[in-house]
View 1 (cartoon, helix red, strand yellow):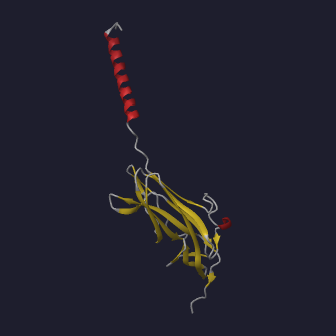
View 2 (cartoon, one colour; view 1 turned 120 degrees about the vertical axis):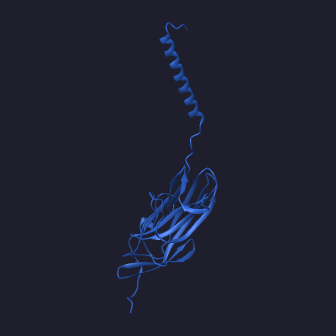
View 3 (cartoon, helix red, strand yellow; view 1 turned 90 degrees about the vertical axis):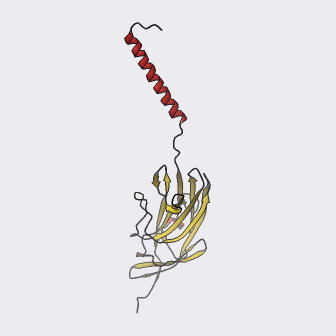
Length: 214
């Protein structure tokens, strides 16, 4: 190529430099791996392993000794082995739920926890069958006294709702953090704290009426 003037030469050199920068940038982007998203999938399915039929006859008004069948599952997509724990809490309409903004768990007391080591891309799914086995009502307040979960019976210290409405089951995903050596609510994804939790509502409508105190 023959340059007709020094100005044309400078222009071609500038274009050449730009082309080199663009080519190097494209090569860097193509060869540099992007940060892999790290996450858990946390879910509850109904009796037919579908996102439906969570309660018998799709009726959220439960009766004493009426079994409810769910499937609880979590999938590890963090890129390595993880220790996870699913915490079950019981609440009513005034219970503070988990907060995704502040990454804080529910204020409700923990009733039971399930834990397991999960390999990368492994899914842990297990049946969760529960029923209210004893409940009473007095002065417009329904209190659940005992609950059976997977054939184990648990005493409920204090769990009540006005007229038996708006009870809820809260499930939280807790993950072992190697930097603190503790289980914490949620996990860290590329420096960001993320959480996963679920809640399902129901009513307790046929509790036994208890007499007023003497």
